[in-house]
View 1 (cartoon, rainbow, N blue to C red):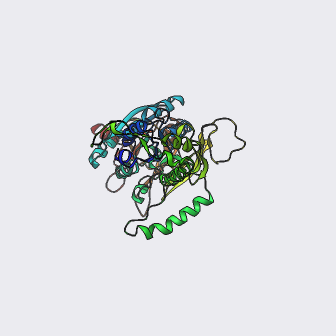
View 2: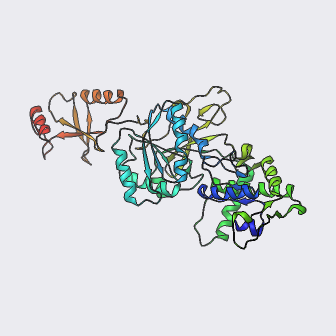
View 3: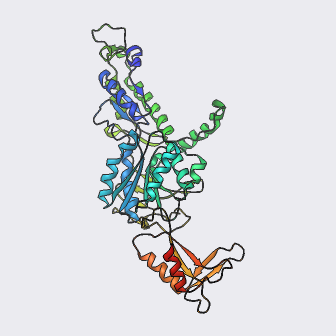
Length: 446
């Protein structure tokens, strides 16, 4: 308000958060001053509804098609949604619901994390997730909260092979880098993020960034350049170009209303003479920026391609790409692909939680977070039926035999997973503790 009334600015970059942008946009409409944001990504804000709002970033809802395609690819039908109780978290929910319905899937459970949670708040929600059948968890959070969430999930043993974790682009290092500790806790996670095409100009800029950042900010830890940083650079470049095209010294002032007041208020705001022309020039600009093509149809950037990434070690490995026209594909340039498809074969095999290549089934028998205990006898004689062997160094038992193979085959045929563990019926000397009847009687006593 002060910038408009006293400084008579003709454009405003920002604000940073969508919740702040709502108020500023109202001022921009009144004063006919473009409000240009590279970080207010909430779908609740629309340039189509507020003409003087310009979004030089992607709308959060643009990623839901890619997320739905991943769910469709692995045949999951039920998803538990975990999100923060903020404008950022709540804004995406209705778009996710619609996108999943289109691929015959549905959100069966919602876990809402408070805006400023204590660790115990996160732990309580994780315990609730363990009590439900669904084992496909979609997490929509900022990196700050999401990092804490996954550290707690890992400490609770929830990064296991029976659970599929998917994250939205807010937890991608491309948008908001997470800590190395958080990445260690996210092993096997799948996520989506915008694809940023490599370019010589971007490479040169990143080199200058790495060189000059320590010199300018020697007291701060080095910060990698995120997609928001690229958008910010392109936004300033676009505004500078538009300013040169629209500048007219004769129209550099505000048309003031006939009011007299010393206080800042809405009624005292004038109207920018240059604002409408500046807005038109910004919307017409088209160039290759650091983040890719800078073009604002409908007043905002339009994503073309999303990457599907898999957290492995300290990296986000790319396992495929998604476009609205062709669906999923393992490589970016699939010239032979014509129809839209979304199957597991359209992606490179990801490494899932538990360090396995086998995709989670997405559903388990609810056992209150506990594994099904299966008593197995230790018998001499015909050991091909069921055999227990122990590692001579670690003492860890391993199992084999006909009955074991049949049991695993039945589990594999089920549409859901059953967490389980064998409990050998042996004494302290690791010898048979009795007959089948004895073992059944002991199970009855449990």
